Length: 209
Ligand SMILES: Nc1nc2c(ncn2[C@@H]2O[C@H](COP(=O)(O)OP(=O)(O)OP(=O)(O)O)[C@@H](O)[C@H]2O)c(=O)[nH]1
Image (tube, rainbow, N blue to C red; front, side, top):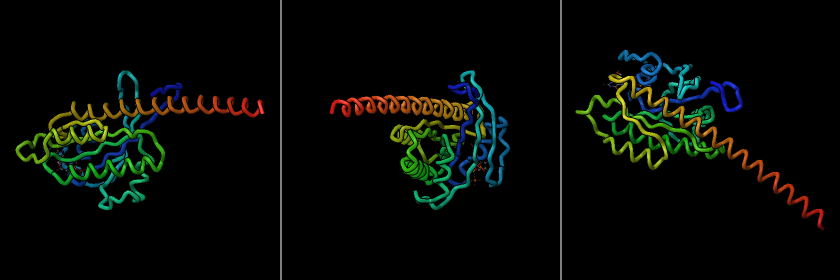
């Protein structure tokens, strides 16, 4: 993709969630449009080009294993937050514990983000396995409320049955990442102006003494 300054830009995306929620299914659906059923539990890094709003974007997608050690000091999470430009946090609508874990992951991301001094981190929350409605234990509204309260995007999808909604997840995240890059640049610009103005005033004050 050609960035604001004409340079090519990649975006790093980490997909997180507890075991068996369909992280790999979601990624493979996005990459290949197919659902193959069984995926194994190998940690993987994929690179994929997409076109969003007519602009090409290279996505590096990390299918990360879940760590039971959710302590915000965990080096593993800190590394992921450092590497990531955005997160896809996945739970299963049939698994309440996986939904609770998403809230904790948001806290960890936000804590690490503050430590690292990065501006608003783009996060998309995904409730997967919506085709298993008869086994649902997490209401769609609960996902929406969590996303609203944490200022994230929210989608309910079925990696098993639908490609389009999975595509929307990654396109939505690309939008957020682009927005956050624009606002970081604007903020840097404003900081620069404030810095040079205060330098001028400091000089004037020193001159008048
Ligand atoms: N019914 C249904 N099953 C799904 C869906 N997505 C994934 N699965 C199934 O759920 C199981 C786990 O999927 P994975 O993609 O391996 O889940 P994961 O989160 O990567 O699991 P770990 O590798 O343990 O972290 C597999 O049997 C999938 O076939 C879905 O949307 N609907």
